[in-house]
Image: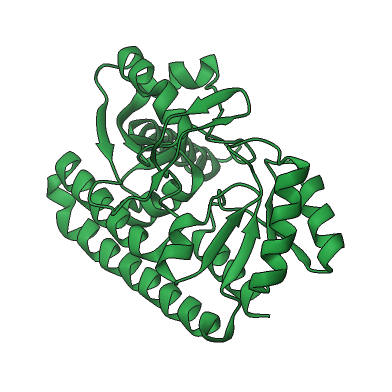
Length: 285
């Protein structure tokens, strides 16, 4: 190896080491689920690494963190919770006990919540309380964005101007998304079915009626299925939304009976804007 080559190789090693050191020193934020990671990364930019506790494809209603996640949480300086989802209800106190240094921020503060009734949900029970799917709403997304901005400014005040610029950009994306959805829904169906009520806030924002196939958080009874079919006929519902976390058999049974569309959606997707528009497109067809 020539002298020049040795020098270049040494520079490469030093650069690699410096990069590794920068990565290792990058502060980490933990959030509950992927849509919240979308908003947090949009505002944090390159100042923080953001990780989700509930991974892609898992339900935030029933997910249990792995031992590796609990160990890894110790590396985060703050936890941004979505608000009142099942995972947080079951695990938040344990997570704080496991990592007492964590600063916890509730990104749902200031949201006008929908109150739900008590019901059993699979292997656990929901007390009557707050409907937790707050992120599926442009109005709520703006509140979540403002709360993330405030949290980041508290954690890293020297970069407040940086976060403010990125917050404003995110608010513009949310406003544009809201405008597109409203335009698409002008001639859309006003009623839709969904297996699990993940679009309660979406429905409220746009004056829609959401009919849930679940009965008290469980598989619907034959009587409830019959009632749903009659309701669909009366309200001229043409779309049933299904999510990958839930069994779609009853949804397809209703769809076959009525000759209406079954539309897969993913309210837990990182691609928040895409999912909001996809729901509107399905209703506008």
